[in-house]
Amino acid sequence: MDDPVNHGSEQKFLDTRDPAVLEEGGGRIVLFRPFIPAEAVQEVTDTLQSRWVGQGPRVDRFEQLFPQAIGADSAAVAVGSGTDALHLAYILAGVGPGDEVVTPVFTCTATNLPLIYLGARPRFADIEPDTLNIDVEHVRQLVNERTKAIVCVHYGGLPCHLDALHEIAREYGIPVIEDAAQAIGGTYGGKPIGGLSDYTVFSFQAIKHITTGDGGMLMLRDAERCAAAKRIRWFGIDREAKFFGHWENDIREVGYKYQMTDIAAAMGLAALPHLAEIVELRRGLLKEYSRRLRDVPGIKLLGEPETAECTHAAWLCTVAVENRKGLESKLREAGIESAQVHFRNDRYTVFADYREGALPHMDAMEDRYQVLPLHPQVTVADVERICDVISAGW
Image (cartoon, rainbow, N blue to C red):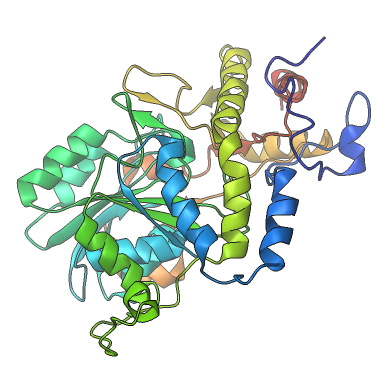
């Protein structure tokens, strides 16, 4: 029987799976696997044989095509990582020493470490127990006259309640900064993630929807900020003015070495034509998980695949379970990887100075969430096998 989700995709992707995965009727199912289209080999080879291997014309091209690929009417600035993009967003938003930024407690540390770079104080907001996204009501309680920005993370690819967050931000005259590292292809209110806030950050780290090996994109709705971002990512130098002889030979702001290379951009350009297919494939798998786990006792899918408000980008399949360690062990015995992936940031020593009061939803969920395999080399048959193992109990 043909696989309705993966049908027709096998010839387009490099097959980097372990031989055991290809064995009939089983094999190890890994938690993550990079998506690398076959065209990437030629794109990278052509780049290596060209004049440009650092930042050059392929970076420019990637910046031009990425907004079109996601349908967002924003300018794009390509950088070396999603963390670079977040740091740039915080700088452009004016975050500095002593400022407070309301931010999720549950996220990759990349969301919050750049705030420490700048001497700002992260104010950790609780989660929504059904989605693990930021709790809007707690955001309302934390925002004050010292708040410089609100950061939200679309956990697993499910967009946050952006209307409510924007309402709070307008009241205080501050921006919303979207960490959309996991949400390429997601939508909110019928509009694509990437064009809804002044600052949106995407990631092309190895296991994201598409990868450039590592890389990121900062999406900006303001052309002046875009020009500033391009200077700051390259030592504070206006590259275009320098190359065309118009640069004043001066640096007026602190810059960084955050640019993307043409080698990385070549991988991104090869992947862009597959993006819509990859997102739909992932959504199909997440819907299959939702259908098969709906009536299984002791487990609940977090973040439904379809809502009236938004479209899930389906980067992660996360469940809340009773006896999480027992489930992890049961899956491991069956050759199936699972893990928590992200952890609450306030447990890390580096954030010890920013721990505050209780976060009841995070406290209740801390030992209960688990991530199941979801990537382009997972098949519907794999999801069936995983759900059968779970349904048998743990």
